[in-house]
Length: 326
Image (cartoon, rainbow, N blue to C red):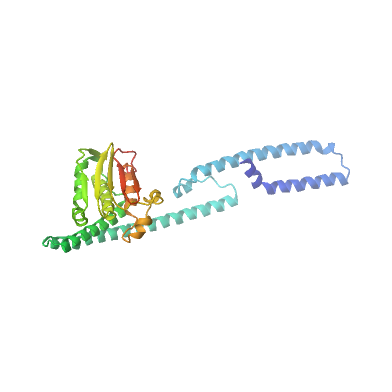
């Protein structure tokens, strides 16, 4: 801080140095006795030192105060210290003008964001009507073709639910309701939605009721389970999917193609599909991102381990840490 202060006042020190040289030259050329000016010089230096010391500490406190409010946002523009110079007054006007502009931009962005949320929410609910109608029509026919269409409809509905989840994820009105939920009930409801795909791909399910309750939000936790099971089915051509309880963790594993080691650290990033996703054009890279965000909001840990060619395991911690919505 002291060095910065010296640098800030450098023009003043340059000016004082020039004055000092002028006086030395005057004393030299006019043979003025040095003793005659020693006392005034000492007095001036003392007064100057006191002035600079006081000014240094005033500047230091001002910088400290500004540093304390710089992270508090534009709402605290009124807390700026009083201007002590014409330049400070201009800076204060500029800062307040920028604060007003920022508030207007934030308000306009919020309005546009809410309009977008409302539009896509209505769209998602409207598209569910023809999906439900198509499903009812297909229920009257039982053939390989109709079962395939049923699976496609389930996938479409899953993508619609994914859109709704993505829109609601950061919403202030997200309806999180924490209570003791039956884990077996959530698993069975989630597995039931993919029963047709299990049959179509001839995959077996290894699951034994765990007889466990977990403190969570049932709707959001079910979305995580469904998304994980959906990925297991998508990337498993033969073999089985296993759902098991190990300690305080729910583990969902498959015998699918697996994930490349270099992709594992990034599987929870938004839009990241990795090598496996690039081979499968249906991959959006958003499903696991949503799972991670939801688990963070609910206070659950989620992690993935995988071996290429052998399968993937997703571990969801049932014990809750500090959630982001409480």
